[in-house]
Amino acid sequence: MHELSIAEAIAHKVRERAAGRSVSAVTIRVGHFRQAVPDALEFCWTMVTDATGLEGCRLEIEQVPATVSCRDCDTVTTLDVPVLVCGSCGEPNVTLLTGEEFMVVSLEILEV
Image (cartoon, rainbow, N blue to C red; front, side, top):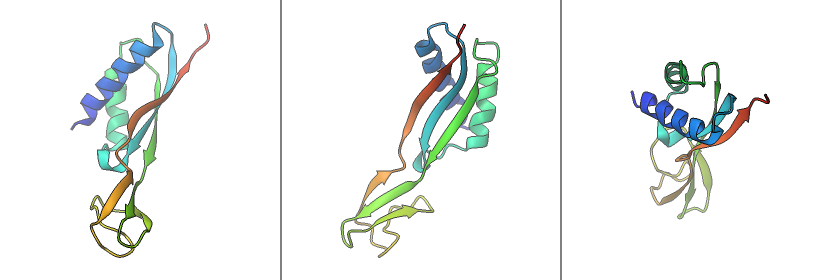
């Protein structure tokens, strides 16, 4: 389960950026090809943030679908499965446009 190491990395970055301030929510953007299971990631988040100064901090996950641009038929399609082929013509001559993202988008800092 790589979600645990992902949650640990996010928590580390959040603590670093928050610089001692209280954080009530963290929003992350995760692409389809990162294959992170949202429920597992949220569960690991609660484990990782317990007794760290981030207890009770919500993890909000924005899922980004995988989209490709086909060089053969010049079509942009969204992939339902993690197979890099054009959803229109079926050819593998595609460029991945979205789906590999993994970033912390925002922190919600509590006013003291």
